[in-house]
Length: 353
Image (cartoon, rainbow, N blue to C red; front, side, top):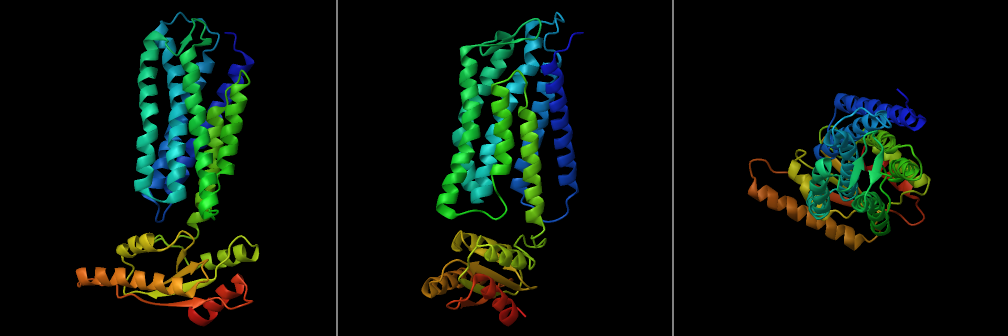
């Protein structure tokens, strides 16, 4: 059996990708702590789709230039799965990145509804392609022959890869950087592999997906070490991280609010999500204490925010007298000529002890 160099290299790359993602799924399954179930679900879906892509693409290249006398429809199955799973991965990346940026499942569902329509259409065409070859054909020796409709398919694949970058740039412009989610380490290997595949006879797409997932997973680990397992807020250790960011001019805070509650109610999260601006950082600093750091230096605005949160919790307490939050709050404003790092240290020393 004469196996070409591009087949050997591609199968090797797909095997590495499969093993990498399998290892990631195992490590993710052993993690103990409070996780965002929607984010974890999307990550698992990305991982499974990448494994399907690497397996189907590896089989397709393994059979490249092999004349086995297989029927047309049988020859078409694996290459069709490989192409559609690539689109599926790009689509889930788009949905996932939107959710990680905005943290709103309602918003993400709207994005998913809009962009799933082309995916469904191309899924139907992919199924039709297996017996008919309307998008591409696989000859008896397993060589690939593209048809005009396949290039439309490819344009959609690349468009779904570009859209998350556009969304990320727009988010940074409007809201600034997120501390634990940076798109470049994820996108660079994915797009590098896609461009390499486009302009060569090798295929490295699944390896690009896998490397992107590796970087994504390690960003999770970096984030999880600052999670409070019980509530999902940041833990006390996060204050030290914040001070480092302030020292390096990567973060800047001018005010803080300290909340004391009777217990860590789930409803409190909904209240914070509704009222707290996107620049707010919520940290659990004690058994029944929370700290909100804000970039705003406007004392009137901070006072109004405190009042809104108090009003919301009072409404909850009235509706649930059997389990009131009993929230109390006060705020601190950064002094003139005081650095952000010193401001946080002052809060730690004077307020949080």
